Length: 118
View (cartoon, rainbow, N blue to C red):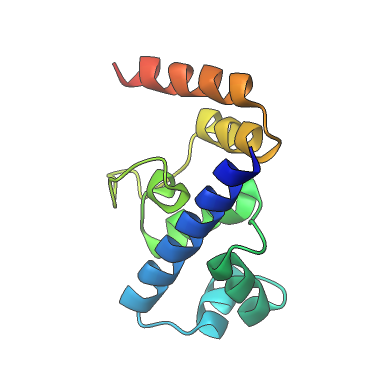
């Protein structure tokens, strides 16, 4: 499961850096926008995949950066949504399951998310 987490952390970091660059923000500026303590260092760690943000930080990022939270997480290829990138509770539960290596739980959350879209 470590490979899945490292891949998702890397993809998250790449997308975070891409969007930060599009917004013409430095790591320090993005950290300030998000209200992160140790802003520049924290953003740097997120971008290089050494640290994963909390559910709350991901939700704030999606909202402040005006992107779909699922896109940031690598769950979706859809960049922006009508709901300003708000991440649902089911999607946050999916992220938690992936982080702890609960493959069965993650799959159950994926099924639940997909059923709600139909």
